[in-house]
Image (cartoon, rainbow, N blue to C red; front, side, top):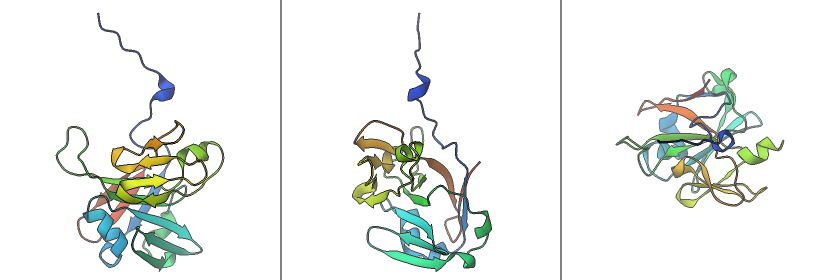
Length: 169
């Protein structure tokens, strides 16, 4: 007889329960974003501050007025996004998936804070408040620091040309 034990508190679904939306149709002119969507282990942080969108990688950044972005009025995020291509396929797949996470530290957010995660080399993100390190190439799990929640992941679509859309309903 086979028995399966599950602990609901330890289980997190693949995608976040939070809503997210961002549509961007200027990928080809946004070098940090283009590199993240077409290469491995190069992630791009997308921040929305003071009427501007800032796209940043570890080596490059680009800024644009938010009003020049189509559908900007539908923007929905906790604290921006981090996007990139994983360095290995997901289980049962053969292609490298595009990944999108919220920039907020999920564990600090649960405590009522919203610090931005910083990018680190090799697909890691770091929270300077709680000192946790997350592995984005491994579904956003914690690799260093106290146990807790993995990063909030959202669905991302890229047409291979100029349009990227982040959607999580």
